[in-house]
Image (cartoon, rainbow, N blue to C red; front, side, top):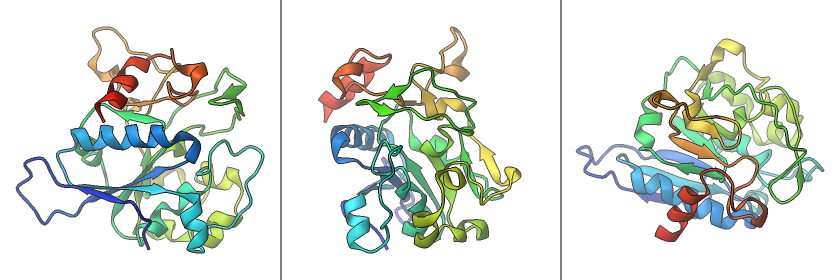
Length: 246
């Protein structure tokens, strides 16, 4: 049960050729194809482990009968809800990652995978974040809710019993609050990842002489340089350099 266009990248000098690729599902929206391409490139370029990058395309999910809900007025991307199909798309086996397409990875994804702890159902950056802007990206409405941005990059323990609830039926019928706030889980089933792995452009700050604040993955959550209105955002140069490298 997988989508097309998945790309497997061999480990850079890995000794174990039998190592299973780490599955990374990336939210895809036709309006932001270039963002997906750059996100994908940034992961592959730095990865020292085998990875399989799979775009979550709503059109493919609809054709395969996995996604059928109508788009709501507050859904700023095509993957606002389809992201929660990640455990299903991974056949409820092993660990897999979901990430929005508006990320730029600056560090080997192995470092993130090595943070995994099997006792958790999911792991994510637990932001305490309330956006100042009323709109984002290309004019989409900016909504505010508890656990904002937690679901933008999630490590899923796909075989965890609690995640078996994330069936297509659940993902297509449950509320945004239930899904984005991880209401199928208890708080102690959600592991924490350092914020530098989901470094919110315009919100998180690098502290001088503090290496623990240096971003490992930049999230252009307000809008990235691929949008005219955001071409001068913070870290725009890093994204543009990556785009030109492809």
